[in-house]
Amino acid sequence: MIKHKDHFHGSDLEEIEKCFGIKKEKIISFSANVNPLGISTRLRTALAGQLDAITRYPDREYTKLRQCISAYTGAHTENIIMGNGSTELISLFIQVARPKKAMILGPTYSEYERDINLGGGSCMYYPLKEQQDFQTDVDDLCRKLHDGLDLLVLCNPNNPTSTAITNTQMRRILDTCLQYGIFVMVDETYVEFAPNESQITSVKLTDHYTNLIILRGTSKFFAAPGLRLGYAITGNPDLIAKINLRKDPWTINSLAEIAGQIMFQDQGYIQETKDLISTERERIFQILTDWDTVKVYPPQGNFMLMRVLKEGIDAPVLFRHCIQKGLMIRDCSTFPFLDPRYVRFCIMLPAQNDMLIDTLKECMYGKNIDH
Ligand SMILES: Cc1ncc(COP(=O)(O)O)c(C=O)c1O
Image 1 (tube, helix red, strand yellow):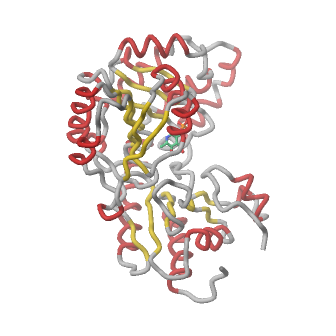
Image 2 (cartoon, rainbow, N blue to C red; image 1 turned 45 degrees about the vertical axis):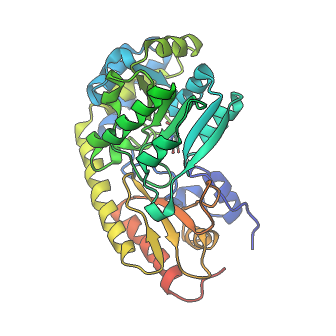
Image 3 (cartoon, rainbow, N blue to C red; image 1 turned 90 degrees about the vertical axis):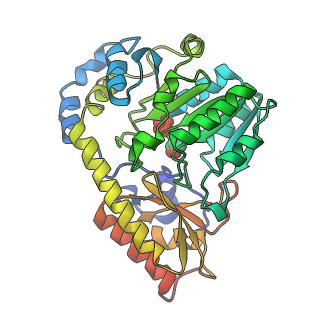
């Protein structure tokens, strides 16, 4: 058997190609959490006709783009900061805020801890509990906040649990944080996939709270991780000024600048995505809920977390079995608080989702699985 590291990031297709000898074009990635529709025809056509844009510098202020995001999100244009994916904005914010002691709700995306540590700060995790289906116990969380902390990090909906906090709950958290002088960073990378987006997003709260920054991007919902187009929203003018002072100019290239203006107005595509993800998420969740060999947690994002209950099967076994069929899922054992029984996979096209379900079923109910 080929030796390989057990854990691959959702975008490690080159690594997979090397380890398993499967051409990366043949792999269906259930681990990258990217909208399976790909980019819209409207975007493809419009962008192809705009290639000459790279002969010009983009608008240093990205005014038109920020106006489009304002119309799309309901945030004030002046409260929007553009970034090279939400990744650039996470690190810019951490470099500016320089948190000494942060609390992170986990298990979650690992970049927050990495950036905080790189900035010389330390992190402690508030563990989401399996017994509560990884839902946040807001009362308990608020009791754990104190003035020794200067930053709270939340991913909403959270990767990998796919759980979410409502904006009513977020108000409580923000009020408590204000009391203790804690800033709150909310990563809303997956919020547009949530069935009740308006109750989950905290964008409106940026009008009322100055201790809040929201990060968003186009990599997942708009299926454009290679475009590197993200944005942050905050109602704190001092923070905006400090980030802008630190930020390199033109980190969004002129093609991404044009693409953004098309994407955020592409109503047909936005609705089609929401409908596809909602229908398929519900369908797949129902199928897996009926199995006695796995447990799935009610998902709010375009992906779900699953725990294997069947003896003798774990995430590495499932991963290997799926990848041999060209289906790449995420082994979640490297996430804090999760163990080798957890996997995550995203919602793809109906026929692809059926292939994954059939493959998982072979592992859970079939025989002769290669361990
Ligand atoms: C929660 C979360 N935030 C941010 C990112 C990175 O997003 P971007 O491509 O916008 O930098 C990811 C990518 O997997 C993610 O899962």
